Length: 148
Image (cartoon, rainbow, N blue to C red; front, side, top):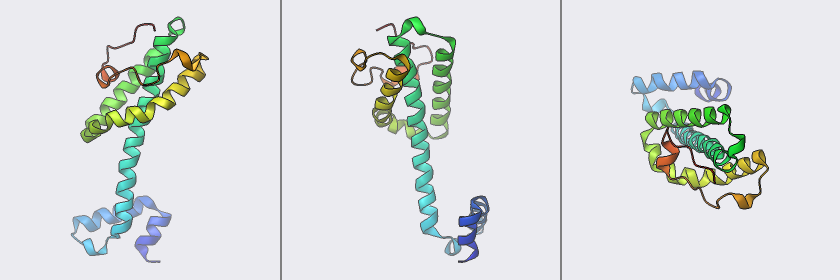
């Protein structure tokens, strides 16, 4: 096992720093391209997973807000606001993720629905089969759904 492989296995941060230095020096032939490709793909998946995760929480709280209005609380509103803020920052950092919003919402909705059902203890029949909120509403800081 060479130094680069050992660093990757034992000290990921050192491996990153070493590869950055190699790239800056133009020593492309010393970089383990396969591992670098795997790591870059992993980073892209992580960013998409984070977007989906934040959408899941946002949608779950919007569903609770809409379908259990008597239980509304400042913490629900705070969670809605926080998820919108963090989604906005995430999209600022990676604008191309906007192209993934529709797909991420479709992936997030079943989990958001499960969360809303579990937390409200309402029947699944109360909630829409598909996400009732278009992207514009999900990202609109002033949107809070009316009771359903």
